[in-house]
Image (cartoon, rainbow, N blue to C red):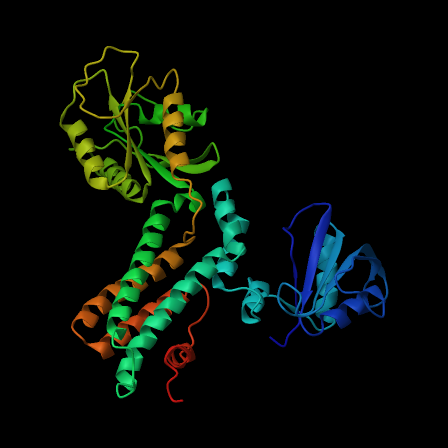
Length: 441
């Protein structure tokens, strides 16, 4: 943290502007050496010539100084906004390293912002996810995280858990004091409410994680029902090989597709059937993995053929998947022979149009839009699940009046939930105990 770090903050390549960012206690003094000035006004764009360490003119650009603690990292920051391209920005980078700066490690600017209290873990994660996001829905959710809405929710929940733990530890450590008679009932009520909140946000986040990551849509069916034709129709180009020969598709074929504001990853799979070669069997195993990964399954059946055992196998997979299923009867241009009993289904001819599938997907995806608070990463969801499980165990222990073990489980829950936003300090428990009960007066 005592080093002054430097890095190019814009993507490599040719562009109109390239930004070199310098952060640390010597940021200002190093920058002044390259622009040959005595000072810079904080938050003021200064147009200046930029020189090498031996006094040669390198470029002209905008220099902006952000004085600590009012900067992204909480340290002094100077940004050189130069003409784009690799040569100029790399040259400035090397000159600053010669003067004593160190090349920043990946994520080090954000790490310093976290360590200096400029952002918590939830915001830091939102920054990274926002950079890589390919979904408009994801951007909206992550923007709310940057505003601190997820952090506020998590910190509020954590404070309630700390208060709950404080109640119990007060019973354990200060049993002789004059405590409220209904303290254990208050504790139980808080615990149940905390569990409900965690359970709700985990369920919502798991159901709608596709809003951030992009929804995964898997096409399944027995061979020769038209899965690859549907994929090509959706994509509007020939992505998958089409043939009358069964088992043509053996590897999963993946492509990205935008439907309305939603990004989906659509996967065409090998036809699922019995009694096949080893290679095709591997393809079918991959198909089953794709089903497990999917948020939505498009189950395709040939409407021109009578339903058989292989179709029944597909229906069983759908029934047991627990996923959103869109049933599609393909080859609607031929005589219908398929005896179906779906409550909702789509009849199409992939050779003509797949617009009904697009419309159905869009309607479902739009229904998944969410304006509330949700977790944005697998790490956050896992921490919340662990916290929820600890609270479940704690509830049983409280009913059995095992207060020490209850306190242990509640500590685990607090540490897990703290992984989302900010580290847990044990002194918070003491503060809550004395604040609520005025003990040790």
